[in-house]
Image (cartoon, rainbow, N blue to C red; front, side, top):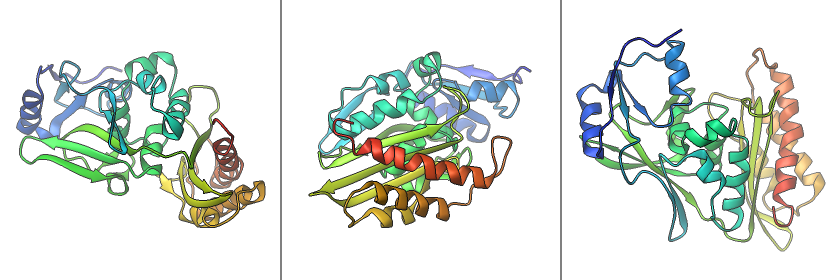
Length: 288
């Protein structure tokens, strides 16, 4: 199939782009990498009257460290994130997560912010944002800039807290210190496919004891799922293989995954049990 007819705009400045969105917010889409939007338009799952292409707008790309945060511009390509030079556990996690994103052509064209704004339940970047309590900065012509907490950003499948007239500008992540270790493990039918279940974890370990823990799961709900049960099972305990298994069991018991053509609910719970220790195990490997 082919998309319905639409008006295409390629503004050179952010104010121009915001003005276009403000003129017709409910029937417009922002185009960055297009790796999700264009296929949806071809299948007519999305039928906007106008596309606002932000690829010519300066200042929307790059990865910067600002104080104790790492800020990623919305139009930063997946491949740029994969090749990041961010030191420590955060840089390592970003490189590992990027390797799971589609295939090389998709990583070359697709964008970090576009993936988060799209809010696919299988998105690695949505999981990372959920895991690390990211802060999303959006802007509109009418209201200016605002910052949205990660916990409030993801609403349901393909739905975020972004308003129709807003553009996601950047995503801010905490620069994890050396006590932190972060990992990711994903199962897909083939390399490059969407993950059926993806597990991410970040733990702060001091003198062998887990001081703080964050666990976020993909493929088990409409949005990234923060597993409070797994986090509670980890915090205050001495890090060990048995602890990782216990945390995975707690996460599997907590979730209520969907059943679809890729697997039923019980199968996805089993994947959580299998994958979370792998993510955590990789996280605790020296130099991971």
